[in-house]
Amino acid sequence: MKYDYDPIPLNHLDAYGSAEMLVRARDYADVISQRRSVRHFSNKPIPREVIEACIRAAGSAPSGANHQPWHFVCISDPTIKREIRLAAEEEERAFYEGRAGDQWLDDLQGLGTDAQKPFLETAPWLIAIFAERYGFDDNGEKQKNYYVPESVGIATGLLINALHNIGLATLTHTPNPMKFLSKILGRPANERPMVLLVVGHPAPDAKVPRAATVKKPLDQISSFFE
Ligand code: IYR
Image (cartoon, rainbow, N blue to C red; front, side, top):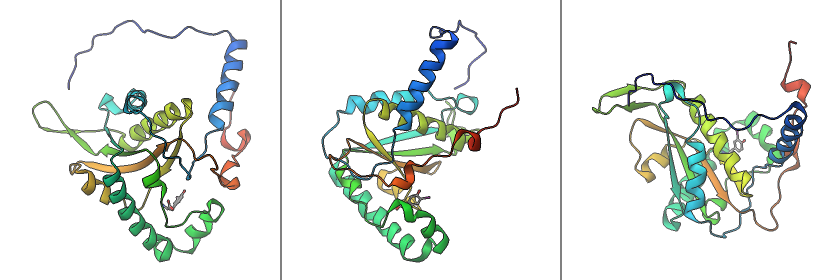
């Protein structure tokens, strides 16, 4: 799609004073800091409309030239979930049995992961996120996309936020390689699978690895020039 420049008024949320800004910023940091990558899911269903609203949030992300180079395939069908689990576990077995190498396996030790991925069937929704390496214009001509991994990464971040905001748990799962997703889900050659997001309520007895809760302090992840 091509548009001429046609500026419209910014429809911005109310501005806050510094004091309220600080309270809200800290409150939000507390809320989002409670997010965990969860691997133990309840099978409790989640209505499709809820997932659709969260995808709408994700689709509002900024992207290179506003090309929105993403596609979200949402799966609750048990047969397809099973097919994905079997294909993912096959790749993961090869990974854990040698492909990863010692260093990578050592780096994963604190997470307690292995080749078994039962959550791919237990969780009510899987969202396979695809990046459009290139797109097509209205005439079917190949169209260049820009900053694709960055754009899809931001959209995925918004999606994780939207889901956390309504009390759902996610896992940013990246079986490696992920090409099997394109095949199972019938996605076209211009799309590359980026993430398989697992979505649901956490199991009542869900546990998370302590190692993953340790986050770098502010002075290690930021610097300021004032
Ligand atoms: N894909 C494997 C291994 C794995 C890799 C990374 I990098 C992680 O942060 C976590 C796991 C698996 O899901 O088990």
